[in-house]
Image 1 (cartoon, rainbow, N blue to C red):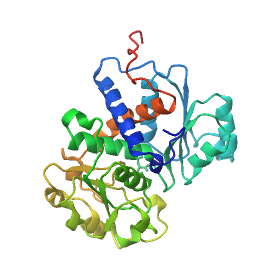
Image 2: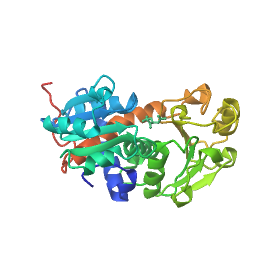
Image 3: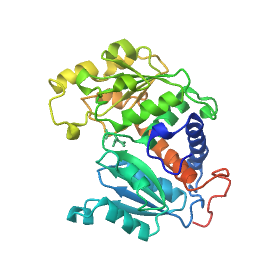
Length: 325
Ligand code: NCD
């Protein structure tokens, strides 16, 4: 593994399977009465969030705490960033506090890369979502969720996603989740199809390792997993589709479309969901929808990433949980 996790495209098949297997090992902790391991005791993880987040921030915090790291949560709102402080000065402040890992979410694509290559900080940098670019830990938790569902024998440990057909639907243009998933899922051997209105397909998609379709009905019937994306209004500066109703009719997942999916197939969503837009409430609440499970899996994945980046090379759970805490 590299020293930082900036892009899902940086992960080899073996790196990705190692992270999934480590997460699987760590997930077993969640069933123990004491969920904490001493593995990262004395290490400091800083969560540096310049953009809003519910799931990702809480998940990284829970992951670091379960590994006994000290956690510092920084959110741009209410900090000196609102007084105009630069990323560089913020980074130098974190370095002065001895951060071993910096988890960064930023509205600018490329901010985590800048942080990792600037020399401002020495710790590992983890991209928790940068602009419309990448969100590698989301792709890892999505791959983990697919593997658990589609290879139930020992949760697919050691396996990749060879031959699995995964369809990603919606606002691909603005979605860092879609970008990271296309890279990671294809590295793991899956066949990925993007479905979106032509206005929400990114420029240059021909060079991505996936197929593109404009017809959701043509692909739902042959998908092992259908991943719905949020329509990202906050990133839209133009009218990308005529009306919400029209969008939902052509690109939304409702009960009728879900019924046409193969029996074993799952519905995924990274959250937050626009119920009634890309997904109807009955689909979101159905037992085929893994949205809540994806959140739970996110903690195990982020534990695995922090553990591996901060130098873990023995079995992640070899050490006994701290009985005393
Ligand atoms: C995604 C994000 O922030 O990129 N959400 C998440 O991390 N769970 C997707 C989104 O905002 O739609």
